Image (cartoon, rainbow over all chains, first blue to last red; front, side, top):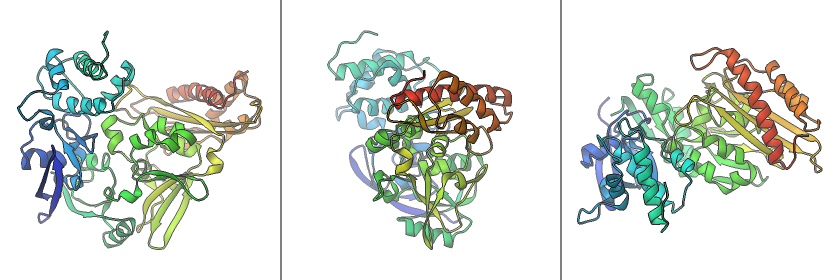
Length: 165
Length: 294
């Protein structure tokens, strides 16, 4: 086909942006190539591994199976948007460090953005609920337990509760 | 980049109908969690797409003027599960679609896409069959409604005419009133799994809870399309809810279903779990309706 382009206007990490985008692009393609947001990883590219996960209007989506043109008018948040302006880590990122929830790091941005949606709900989920909410991500290094602990710990902290694992 | 020939974006249902007529070869894409994956696999590569995803008017759950539960076709699984009307009138549908894929898939996947796919394993399909849902289709000549049973023609083929898109799924008031149901999905793992078998049962009990006034059961993956079980329903309708009845009911299922051997499970195994799932889902439905199994 001859290339088909479309102007896509959206808000990315709090900033209003617009760009001409190839309609064949996935949101992963747009965020990585046009906006250099490389926390958005290309993993399976078929919506199974969760490495490309971002928040769109506050909900977690695998950006690999989301057309870039659908970003029109949406608020998108990537891992880069969690950092404070002075580069300080957010509580959930710090918890991943503390709990050694990272080895190779490829799944980490996706996991943390799902964690961000979970934490934004402002609820104290049970362990079973939390496991289900985290089930859209594959990690081949950590065995998940430390990731689970990092999210649970942050959830308890935000609720002002002490945690007993 | 996706290997697509062209993308046409519909801004409204009428717009989508116009695009359908103009581009008869094009594939409709709702949330895309099947179409885009198939395109990536090469199955639908090089096709034209009509995107209906941006039509916000097709989102949300409401009661229409006849108090039918109306679910816009683009309503995502997670929004269905969280919806207060669904929780009040057809909670089992919210529970069923909460077992699709993963949290991210449930945010993008739509009930319209799940049904238009025409696959027997769709987690919404058995419950929609068991609740006698109506499928609303909008085309050049207006709107028509098709019972979900007739909507599924054969595996992967549904009754959408060349000028139509699906705009809503309705659960009639007579279907949900005083009715309680339960869905069981059998899968090899909990997340990112396609059902080996899915079973959805619902009952309406008499006011004294001693009689099953109406019992409906439907399966996914028990045949090429989702299916009801008339023999089992006949055994339960008008009967007293007892454990013995549950056993009879569950055995009768075998007269109705026709599962196949596949790499996921053998026919014999599917038949075996179908009986057990029917028994458990009936028992749970009776409990949810305020009765108990004598």
